[in-house]
Image (cartoon, rainbow, N blue to C red; front, side, top):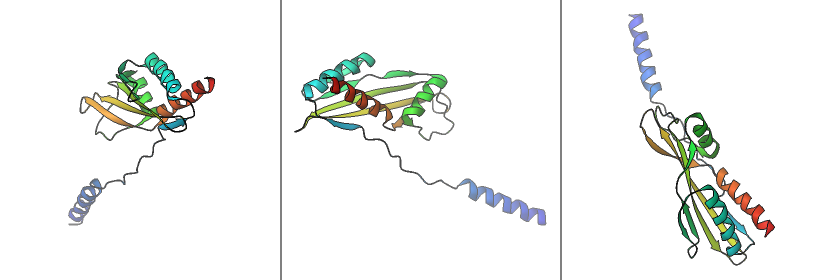
Length: 160
């Protein structure tokens, strides 16, 4: 009889404990825009030169200030997964393994302000789950790569 109650208690604890959820912590990312004292023409020429050196350009519209890129392959296997972990937050995907590939694309917006130019960079990261879902999943950016680019633009505009 004691064994029966012990098994029942264990089963109830397992069922109830298995349904527990964890609190979702909001993700804070770095700011991905910056204002420069330089003119829009100076900012634009520097950005076009640097972005086109690293990415294949999908669209470039100087009138609207928009540059979009194609995906850039960050690698596969352990190296690609490490790149994703450096620049983005891993999504919650059951049984996922991220060895199938990693990629990023950029969207850059340059707008003229009264005092110069504002640049906003948005990076979209994706990782391929080659275990469970067998598809690409978006990894939310932490803003680090965008800030690396904004810092580079700081250095370039300081020269001009």
